[in-house]
Image (tube, rainbow, N blue to C red; front, side):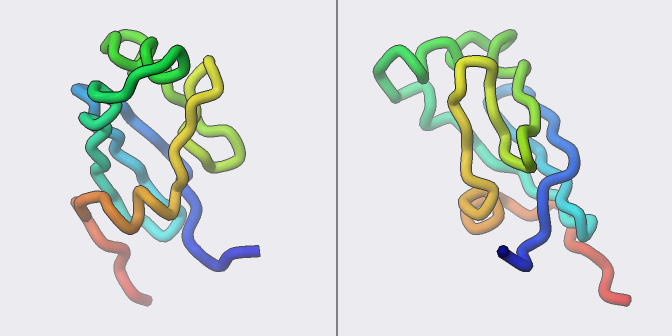
Length: 87
């Protein structure tokens, strides 16, 4: 089991996922590359209203059609909005 913080809240808008991790860190992750993907699983995400249907399934950003994004990739490649405060 990983000791990495887990995503506890997620918001989606304009092909950006804003992920709040369990340690309080906020990360913005651009999903603009999904607009370049082809295939039936990526196609629905190109519609903004569908993109915003993202939800967390066991801490993993997921869409109703099963498309998901690795939380570690978001942490690694996203832009930090706020870091957690050390106690």
